[in-house]
Length: 431
Figure (cartoon, rainbow, N blue to C red):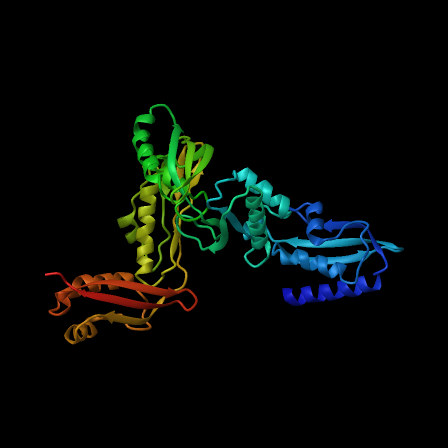
């Protein structure tokens, strides 16, 4: 039976039972299969409690409250017993946490991660750091955060969005961020703990990273350009793939543009790792020969995230050229802590093929338009290729009239229809 129909049947049955026993009260509530949530948390969300008088809709409302969170695949609420007090049974089927969306806090600089977790959990009892995209939990978390900001007398505009995965951050997340005031990194104090002899190698990179990070938006979340992305590459590009930030302190002060943050932290590098293997499963679009040609890492090399990302980018480029505009490559490190080696096996998630819907050249003379029409080869319905557009702009300027123009283009892709509207803006070349 489909979930929606099954739920309707459950609620209807619960309503009938509650009607028949509306004069009774709840002796106790038994929760079955509630983990990872505690019985007390489940009861708080359901609205049920021992001693409570049963109204006509008590059981139906309890089931609905739990289903509305989006955290349960199924919820059944029923009665048992005799006399004027009855036992309520709440049977649950929680959705596994690894099937929910991680929650990300981008720039709530006034709270430590521990304060965020505790503050939200006290207001959203089932909070475990995850949310369901379809339930009311994301809104409940937002409400909790707004209460926490108000309690600190912080005037800020808070919102959230579901962010699609990228190669750099390969998780779909619910990201909460402050839109106003603008929060930026103003100063970074960075130290590091590394094996003996590594200081001379790592110090220049860490100094450059700290300087580059200042004045950029503050972001401790799970998406976009984060502080980890800014500060850890000097270590991760020299084999220290387990490098992480520790002893983090944040202080903020008003600035002309919003809020300026001073960020103090230490990088714990761990030990250096070498590459044990770097392999690719060939596909028709990207072959083993392509991978051997493009691979920037080889067995025996120090692990290097920059080189890994360069290789991943070349794989993605091959898919982009075939119209896979959402393609990403995932290459999680497979660590062997005994030998201090790491294996990588990049895997592509291509997504759907995008096709050209329209192409609109702008500002061409009649003669240049004729040359464009005669030489343009990507037609509506063809797989969209940014590489072809760029190649056309570079090579077709050799034609007499198009040669008098420079060009830039904009591709507007619709993720629902997987179609692309392409606009190429031509401007007369300066002579």
